[in-house]
Length: 395
Image (cartoon, rainbow, N blue to C red; front, top):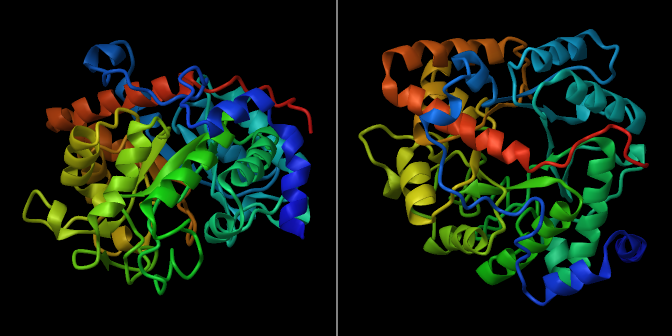
């Protein structure tokens, strides 16, 4: 009952013309958040920008504090003002209510020279960082949406969700999950109902509805977890997830179709390991492997937009690699935004540590410097597509 009520209430939040065009299967190239298909930037893009400033545009962090007066929030505000971070990732600990979130996001955007990416995981189902007690709309899990709602109804529901995100000051929702539901016992995808389906066409269709509904409200999205987490037997939050024997070509095909049809604002690299994509002797997860991001995603699938890593403090990474190895490998692999969620334990200086590592590496290795410059160009171009946030959007 609540699901159908939510759909009906949010029909008023879309325009008839936009919806009609979308459900005729047309890609709206004129959308303000349409996928970027221009060539990747070169070093000349950043010739007048200092290296620390370029690196700052690559780092997203989770933070403590849930009000503008919280000392922990004042520290993250200072980082934004100094250009040390490209954005922030909200967790439930940061959300005391609508007013406090709006005030924090307004302060962050006013402090930064460039627009900040204000991100959250608000997929639906069990992955909704904003608690129901705040009055934020509830959306069912992806599996439930695909099994009980038409694509049109899904679009309407996600449009309502995106409308709230924008009014609260968020401009990046880390979804949709484009993974195939290949293993019902998968502890992080299948068991939680986070995948729309085991059928590639269904996942493409409902992921497209998620993306387009967010674009209508000026909210970016990130297809995740490339090249696929749906077949895994382990949760990469808690350890090494080897999908060499379980992964299927259809998982990559979903991303290929979404990218080719223009539904990729960002792509999130996952932490699964697949020996089939390895280019060297080291065993590296997808997020650190050039064979996955540079070769498969960029060259083979033709994705030209920004790549954002999954949280690099998850156990699949932090349990096997040093911070220095992680940061340099992530950048050389082709990630444009590297994420430190500060979820289990908070390191308030993680951005400074990552910046110092990359500054030193860029001086010694021309490949690192080039990767930083190109990443900076991609992130700046991505942000140029964002609607201006005033902090005064109607409630």
